[in-house]
Length: 518
Image 1: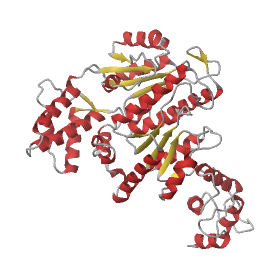
Image 2: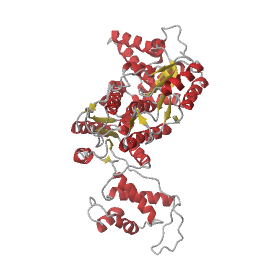
Image 3: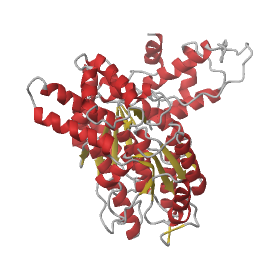
Image 4: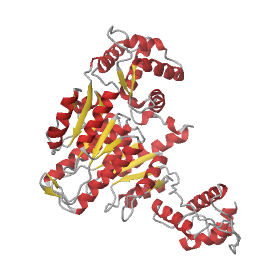
């Protein structure tokens, strides 16, 4: 109440914004005395990154809360107005981002879709948002944006065809893989159109088409719709947020908003990860029995007998040897629900069909130790380094066999190969744009698969398929590499720069875990 009354007295109505130069005085009026002007300046910079307007009472409240917390920890001393008490050297404050309903990701400069269309619609619906668009991007903003994305209820991405959308495609793929609430609006690229304010080559045009097609296929795997206009997508966002209001726990968002393939997905994810704390992305059948039993107790309507009867028809099944990834785990749980329904006299034929299908997916599929993915334009690393090392190792591997540039890298055939491999190795070289590869790597990192990366930075002297990149293109594709590397490291994924070192580490990971062909 003191803050509000002081605000009204010194600033005016609570909807009014405060000039930055008045923040220090207002803090003093409520008996808060930061130890230096630097601290106030840092907080104002944080507010500017969150919003391009002057600080509002919401940001000011966050300022005061953070100062009080720092004071409680002993980092600050409350001074009298004469500053008589000795000051401590202040600790640099971490960037603080208050939670918002929606994170506005995707195309940035020179697009204006946020201010022209999305923000007015969101404000009319009283939906709060975080706008990451800044006049000049800096690498340190990755951390600020990460916190905003983590706290947002919905990730709203627009991929405008007038930009390359490198980071947008990578991030959207990651959120699809991790099953975060994602809403996507995407334009298709057209030949001979300017991108990023400049003409692009036909090869780059095809790579952009491939990256976008790959993302669409990855979203389709999760049943996530792709919109072609912002108003429709905002309406869908509003529906998702309304579901949050009716459910006590945020993680219990109704999966019916996306598809039946995501039923109870968050709870299943928690159970699966409890049984696989090392993040390898797989459990054996013995663990599966335990996982299903735990899920059954939560659901209170399935028994462990369902699972045993579902998987025991093959006499050759070794519960310790057969590995099951998270998607397969969810698939069997769904099939078992169908089996349970058939016992009540419904859908018996469908249940038998589902049972057979899931068994063949898990037991009869050929398995590979390593999937080798990378640009189809740059094959020297694969033919001269990766394949000879893998042949020498004796491990079973399979490579991406995409030969046409402008098609998706997540076709059913390619996705099946990745799902059937224990370790996914993605190579992003300095002689390729690698947008499609970065999207695939990002998706499977989000899905908590076993991934290892080779990421090489692009340089001004590098040629892509004999083409020299513009300054803008170099910046866009390198920014994508920065985001992917940061994402990988946050998720405990190993990242290397040397192709040979990456392949050797992949071989070591497989041999150390006894990754023989199933």
